[in-house]
Image (cartoon, rainbow, N blue to C red):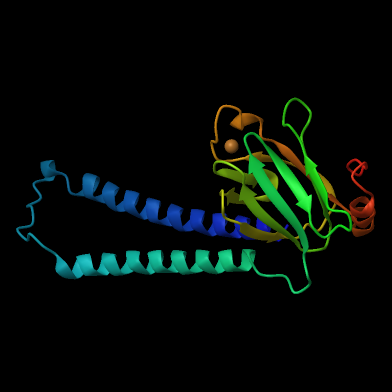
Length: 215
Ligand SMILES: [Cu+2]
């Protein structure tokens, strides 16, 4: 859930900065329109340039821009920190028009897939409290794995693997979607991500292909 927290912080701070800039610009514009109306016989300035004033506002805007870039990059780094413990690995493949989740660490290689038709949605099962590394790729066109509730999103490219480590601190089930338009049935590309206790996860992982998703 760390990503959701970081996302919340970034969104809140950027909204505040954008709000302050918007209100300042509006106030200056309002002042210029109302207090310096032509009807009041205000003589227009004869100066064509105000280099010092321009330098000030370029400087102020540059400080905002540099701060936002550096701060966002730092938060992005926090979000993608590599876990100290060896993570649980899941190989995720997007395809037209569904997902496959494969577990290479299982004694007998497991994989979960679905058709994304009707209720046949695949479930990405993960343990709570352990870092989970998703290795994301695509079999055909570009897709994007997105879990809106948890603020996870990453693109899936053919012939390329993107990795993303997440840790879920509580059990639950959330809906995931494809966030990149990928063709006719893109809108059906839903899946579930389900976090269960580590014991339940281990039991499920070693349980063989016949075993369904933990209840
Ligand atoms: Cu799609």
